[in-house]
Length: 530
Ligand code: KIV
Ligand code: ZN
Image (cartoon, rainbow, N blue to C red; front, side, top):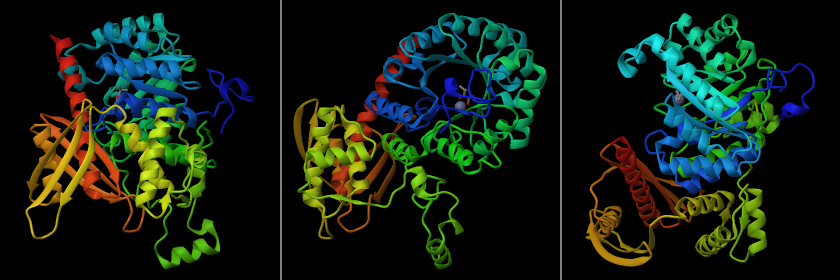
């Protein structure tokens, strides 16, 4: 980890940090949450923010405060509790957005307003319907307004990579003159190549008066799979902030993956002479948490945090690794927080051992959440011979995800087999009242989902039903993901249990809970628009 800006000796950048210090700006809670199906609850956002702060992220983009009351509350709460990171709120170039973002980050130790406007001809003509001159005026007015509210203002040129360089330079100049302290040049549509992206930063930094007074930032989307390469290329051209998201989640194909950026810098110090403040041993935990709360599975072969990232299957590779680890590994699993699956405890383990294990896994739970997790751990240990770290993580993450759900699965009995019809008897707790129903279906999963539909009538499309085992063995917990779609709204739910049908019911009910939150959010936004 690098030193803090105040401690840095030797050449320093404009903000007093070491010249090679790269600020990690995490947008998991904003751009990440924006992607279809990744909606997080308030508690989930808090949990992710705490993890990012503990990991050493420099700036946490906590949300888009004007988007909804829920977004505003989450950004404000994160701003109040975060200890080290700067907390940013996003705002369009609209006064109401800027004021709302300023309000949301008001109590942060370090608060930032991140305001953006499109600059490319295609956006100006077809989306904004404004002239270049009008947009320049908007930049001056909105950045100045933000700067009146906070010291730290980031301005982004949306679709910078498809903006003619002369006009882009004029926009950046206007933003700097109006008081922006960070200038972000996003590859909004993931169109640039590394060489082009670096050249754009070099040109803007060379041509714009005052460019030496601000920090330049990257924000790359992964439509062509180049987001990380583009971000790193901009470092060589002087950028010192990278916007990225855990597991690379974000609009469409996602954003640059935080863990890939950080480990590339750490592993290839010879080619990339920079450093970050990230505690890389927390990368794996952050990835699992984000995957759990967004219900987005991490692909097995995902760099750094995928299940296979450190697995060696072929005989030749295994032989080499056993003789000398570096024959086939350029970084150690421990450096990203991947330990060997360890047998943790059984049904005789007590509260203290469980508390110590949670601490080791990076969880800090309040008393109620701890008690709830402990009871569920005991239940699991009764049903499962070996309880592994992964089991504990699945159990705790699920508890956090469902803490404030209005509907909960109380019990489920399923009759399966080939002598049909398959049936399910289900009890749900809905707003504190228990309801029981029986249903049949074309298989046990269908019967279970039909029972849910009887208790909570709704019309949705089941977009995805996916099961995977948390650990090995026939008594392993099944982790089920369910994605539902209703009128363009997409939500995903996840459930874990040693019984696949119970996990399925929990996942479906969890998705329904998220759908209810999303319906309210949409209704509020529509009301605001009237
Ligand atoms: O992709 C983009 O341009 C953005 C901006 C809001 C920074 O997400
Ligand atoms: Zn983006």
